[in-house]
Amino acid sequence: MMRLRLEEQKLAIALPSETLVITGHGVVDLGGGSNLHRFYDDHHTMLQFLCEFGTDDSAIREIMLFRPWDSVSPTSESEWRVWDGPGAKIRSTSFSADGHAFSRVWGDPASPWINPSEFVEEVRADDGSVRRIHQKVMSYKREVGILVENLILAVERDLSTHDRGTVTLMIGYGLQPSDVTPI
Image 1 (tube, rainbow, N blue to C red):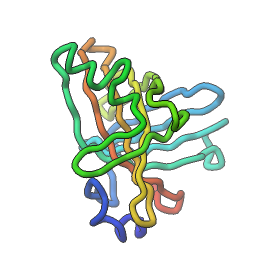
Image 2 (cartoon, one colour):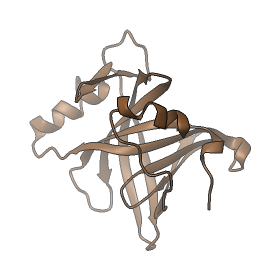
Image 3 (cartoon, rainbow, N blue to C red):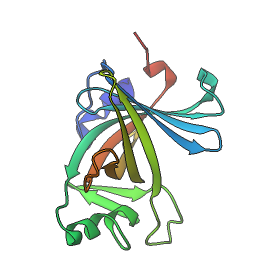
């Protein structure tokens, strides 16, 4: 975490506390033996583990720490088209906000528009409740000194409430296994 603290003044968002109290666990089956495990605190900070072919430590391929940056709740079809659909922000080669410019991670850089990844995350909270969240996700990044700052742009819909959904923007950073100590 020290390398994150060294660049903190240049980051798009303040870093969370180094101690997270986990109150929810989400799982996404990515297929092919790969899973995302997402651990949430009450402030929606997310510790994400990409695991392949198992659940032991050797299966962890990537660890990311994400914090909410912004959210938008479109109320009309025209507002939704700005974020989701052909030519929408979630499909573009770049994303800019608050003076920070991010480049799309996935797909051919020469293609101006690509489809986002889609999946359903099952989230279990400490109170025993379970939510199924359909997500369309695009990943962006920018270099900040010695770091890579990641942006997830996600269109999320809670399948249990049949809501219209929310557009969520989260900023994250790669961590090393030594940065994460369960207590």
